Image (cartoon, rainbow over all chains, first blue to last red; front, top):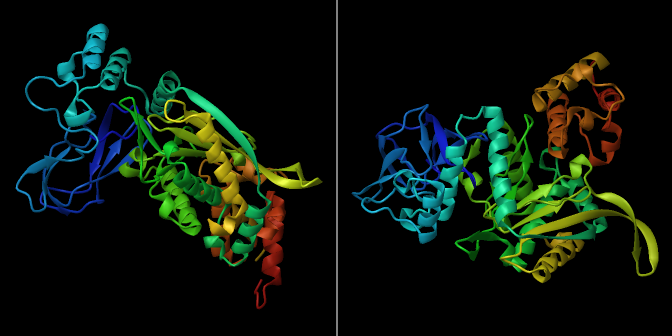
Length: 363
Length: 88
């Protein structure tokens, strides 16, 4: 059972898309798993053959429990599905960090019953905390409440663990919007690009310049990601939100980002997201401009390092070289983890974002 | 195409974009996006669907005419009426 969220502890197998003997390749969707937030399509990370299906539809299983056995191409060994997110627990003495052992004793958690998410399946402090929470939450939650519960866990963890700092800047969007308008005149309506895609491109390029905001804070260390997978906060029509990632955003053109954004929004609202999109986001972007919000003070999605917020583009008086005019102005904010970066670096990111949007044709 | 049929096409399209909404309850002069609680992506999807369904080109510059239900129906009626070789 893959971990499909910062605080996911278990999931329910909804359906298998494969049967024993079926050939599979990396990226194939082999199953659908129900989480508190939504049903997620589970991709496979190996190429080979389905050896055995262990879980049955309807089974509720802890994160890390093998769902199936896969015979990897070219290898005699048989491995469990989805080992990348949570390796199987090794036999013998329970592997746990000293902090995890101490905490388990304090909270009355049985380490023998836990599946570690650390290196080699070692149990870490987070695993014990999650298990303690599960003990406290006795009755199963209703599906509608499940979404709220999952968000509550992730956001409470964020506020508890991450020392946020916030910065904001106002960006003159005259050139960016004019350029976009000119480009859109040449495009069919199906290929039309919204400002949101332009902003995503600017964020991705900005992170290339300031990579310390892109990645994770785990094991008390900054782990910068070389890939930029932009998590996009998407509100669902039935309430709640999902943060699927647009993978390798820095390698995509603005047109490709727009297409990816439309695709991921459509699938998020239809409940057809893939596991890699849920687990691999390296930073989150929230755009609340459609709701009239001017400034976004975000809460970082752990263990990510930052969240970039965009508000509504509004007309404002704007002084430039001694001349006062009216310009379309966007407020961009950065919520960042102070353990990973200082405000100076955060300010450089917002400055870079502004500079990039003044030359949209170069994005 | 009659205005009634255009309105029906708009309603059908809205139901695809916002299945939980009842377009008949939207005031004709109400802000469409606010009434349906749809974002810029859903609004663009609405226009793309109407474009495919009715064959009407909708340039970005005309978005200002599409704020309300009555404005949208009026705009589409006008575009369809202007189309050469129409059969109404």
